[in-house]
Length: 440
Image (tube, one colour):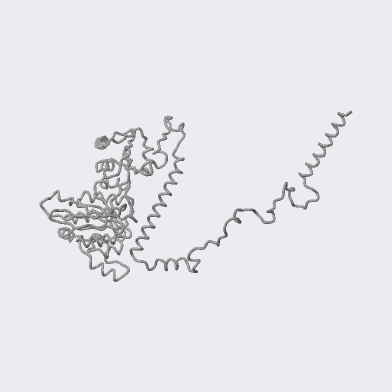
């Protein structure tokens, strides 16, 4: 009897709990239409809206652009800010912008290569002949970001022979190739580590599909010394001076050099001949100019530290080794460099296909007075050192550099038909022709 009463009470309790549960799911009849189920608890911030950390932070005004704060347009603001600055300040700002652009592009390339790393790695089962995929660090993206990967037999051999780079890491050779004898000999002398079990795909990945001939050198980049000015020179003993700058300590040093072609004719006086490239952004053109300069007997090549092509593996391949063998310098302020070199007796010769053409008539007339014929170049070099300035094929040499030049020379076109279509030479070809004319 007691047991049956207990079971009855438990059944009634379960039935009551079931009714409460069903009522909670379906919603109470007294709640307004459209409202959800009754919340388990009510927040004390319900009337104040969503809770965030903003109310705990200091209040700040709406961000405004600088030109909005002063009530100007963007163009008017920057025109007032930079319209009247000096040429030196403008060039310094330009160098700063170029450095920021290079850093931004390097970050983009690094991120892009890291993303592509996952695409490059393949399943070992899908590799040819079921060979497992390699896992070396240089095959996981861009390799060592602090190193450079020179490719091509001549570029690698010249870098190892000249030994102008800070260090060499290792020599990477395609498994089906034999190391060229000269390269193998120098690598052995330097005690260089050789990795020879590499596929063509792996080498293509490191060189961005460059023509590597099965040989790659992992090395530090070539860093040209910073040049302050070209110094005095003595044609009788075929020597000249250059003023180099140590950026770390802020010091300068005078370095004496011998004229390269003096060894072929030691009894004759010889003045140095160098090349300065202005705004040339194609690394293959830089490499081709260096190759022609070294072959024809020029003494050095100077590049600006901004607004120019990178002196890297592409330029070294096009130079066929000349970049590591030719004296290479860089300058931070081209206009000051040209002024300082002129004061030491250097003749500045700029090349221009149309020296008389300029939107400003006064500048055009000034440039016209500096024009000479190519036949006059040998006589200028016999009496003074010469710095030949070459510009890009599109915009050419900047007007402020041409105005500071002593002479302007042109290579005239010899055709009268369709001369508006092919109206210029490749800058590396023009450089080789003018160098040959100077040394004629």
